[in-house]
Amino acid sequence: MRAYVARRLLILPALLFGISIISFALLNFAPGDPAEIILRRQNPEEPPLPEAVRALRQQLGLDAPLPLRYGRWLFDVLKGDLGESYRSGTPIMSELVKRFPATMMLATAALALSVVVSIPLGIIAALWRGSLLDSLSRLLALLGAAVPSYVLALLLMLFVAVKLNWLPAIGYGSPKNLILPAIALAAGSSAQVMRLTRASMLEVLQQDYMRTARSKGLNERTVIMVHGLKNGLLPVVTMLGINLGHLLGGTVIVETIFGWPGVGRYAVESILQRDYPVVQGFVLYMAFIFLLANLAVDFAYRWLDPRLHFGRQPA
Image (cartoon, rainbow, N blue to C red; front, side, top):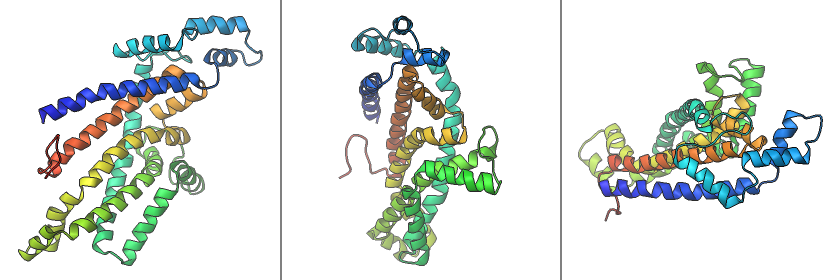
C-alpha cells in the first residue's frame, strides 16, 4: 500500500504540470489584451493610448516571450505564490483560500443530497424492477440528466423564489440560501448515481453469494444491506468521487446565478475581465482538488472490497 500511495503521489506533480502548460497556453492565446481591458475599465469614456497600453503590458510582464512568462509563473507557483490579480492587485492564493469554503459547502451539500436521494432510489428501482416505481425513478433520472444545471437554477429561482417566495433567490450565510443552488447542482449528479446504483444492484442480485446467503436463512434485509449493497457500491463510489470534482467545477455557473461568493463566481468574473493570473490559479487549484478526490476514491475501494490490492487487479 505504501508503494502504491507513493506512486500516486509522484504522479500528481506530473499531471499538474501538464495541466498548467495547457491552461497557460490557452489563456494567453485567447483574444483580448488584458492591459487594454484594464485601461478601458479605468477610463471607459476614452480609448486608451497605445503608449499607456505598452507601459502597462511591460509593468505586468506581458511583453516577455510566452515561455519566459510561463517559467516565471511556474517558479512562483512552486513557492506557493499564484500571483496577483490584474483587477484588484490582491494575492490570488489568499482569495482562493478565502472563497473555497463557500464552494466546498455548496459542493458537499449537493453531493450529500445526491447520495441521500439517488442511492435509495437506485436500490428500490433494482429490487422492484419493472414496477411503476422503477419507471418513475428512471424518468426522474432522465430528466435530471437532460436538464442543464443552469436551466434548473433559473427555473428554481423563478418559481420557488420569485413566484412562490418560499426561499431566497440570491445570497449567502443562511441555510435557506443553500437549498436552491444545492438542488440545481445535485440534479445531474443524482441522475447518474441513481442509474448506476440500479444497474450495479441488478447485477449483484444475480450473484451466487446472494443466493447462498438466502439459502442460509438470512432475512432479505440483511442479504441486501450486508451482502449486496457493499459490493454494489463499488462503481457508485467511483462515480461519487468523480462527481465531487465535477461538482466543485460545476459551481462556476450556479454560484454566478445565485450570487454565491465561491471560487467559481470569482473565476467567472476574472474570465470576463481577462484576469489571466486568477484563471490560471483557479484551474491549477481545482485540478489539484479533483486529483485528490480521485485518490480518495482509490483508498475507499480497499475498505469496500478487501479483495482489491493496490497496484494489481484481483484474480
